[in-house]
Length: 161
Image 1: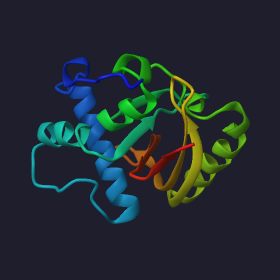
Image 2: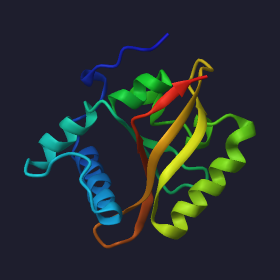
Image 3: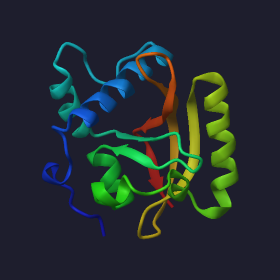
Image 4: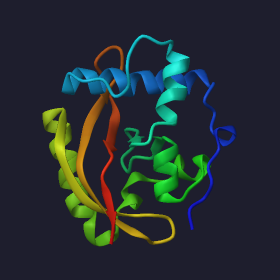
């Protein structure tokens, strides 16, 4: 069962969230040369627009076992979580224990190279539903000073297993 997620449960007007979304967008453009969503709107408008995109977008912070700090509406639905649950979960728990070593190698590769655009892996939702992600992009998030601020991933193709 997929939880219904509404914008009311997500602090879309929070200045810290808006700033984080801008870092996601700026870092994605820096590494890939592409835009996740069209430029030309205010940061607030882009934060709202990004949340409601049909593709999956998620990010985690810099902790030793990084905690998820963003998931758009599509990500929350895929992982079957509320904003509060999603953003308090270690990102390692998005993968089954058997797949966590592969996930760690992938994130290490991203840390070294800045980004990858060939991500493929099995992930698991809150209810235990497994899905294969293919063709994803994973990138390092950098702050305005170029300091590492976490990692993000986006994809629009997954298959339930």
